[in-house]
Image (cartoon, rainbow, N blue to C red):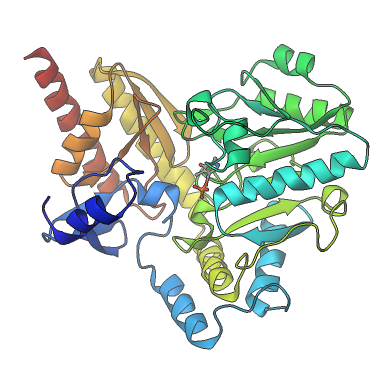
Length: 398
Ligand SMILES: *Cc1c(COP(=O)(O)O)cnc(C)c1O
């Protein structure tokens, strides 16, 4: 125990998280500082959240101003920030309508409810198909779609959810029928180990959903809002989903999520059938409006594409030189390097050297830095990654 926040947490916070022994106090751009005065280059960005970096002046200003004006009113009334954000999300997504919530899992729950409501109008029984190795959150409904290991101990699990292996067209075709309400997938699986789904497969999902009048839900909570080089990842493929879920980077750190849908599906739900107290309150929407404005003004998705290509190429060089890396994958600034061993110790070595990183799915180093990261800062991450890999390999041999 190195400081009071850690002692207090060990005594008073439920033991949910395996945490690193640092207490962070401040952030600025891609850097964060701890209580000991150590500075870290944050290549995790609060798990793909702080895409504009920490304490972005325009987001901070928007939050300050709105906090002093009106924070919360409930959804019994209209607010300017919420209506403006709904319009913006419709414009950037190419879909028709949006509604708000406070987190990713809640957005997925909203999407599933919307899809089921649409399906119920056609007398479907509610079957939802997800991909093996997916991640959609930690509520009961979202763990029902996800990995078995997150369900253990929380039974009974909600029913009506089935899985198919991603990228297997035949398996999906076999599983889908006129009773299928929806297919849900992440265009790039995040927690599952940074696995981009084949373009071909995504188009196949679109085709089968059309054939069976099922709802295509894309979970863009991690890969969306510019990270892959487009505002939403499906925009690389020239298709549109019926519903897209978005959260994480949407408020650049202020909690907010949204469900964006086509009219066809959105029209199935009427007022009183879903709702939330906080969802889309003026404060959260002001943060998101400011975030999206900066995204647009500074072509942040374009920056993610360019810097992501540089980062990926540097990782591929490392992979050529070092046997430790099995594969490099990802899109834009959502990158993964699959190791031949567990990644936990590498994350620790990187932290000792001043870079915050993360390991997903046991052995995949996941890099989801702020999209404003510079090439020089990417070089630093790469240098530290190489040193840390060498250190861990040397330890393993000793
Ligand atoms: C993080 C994540 C979620 C869950 O979001 P929370 O805000 O943690 O509830 C859902 N889907 C994907 C793809 C995610 O990456």
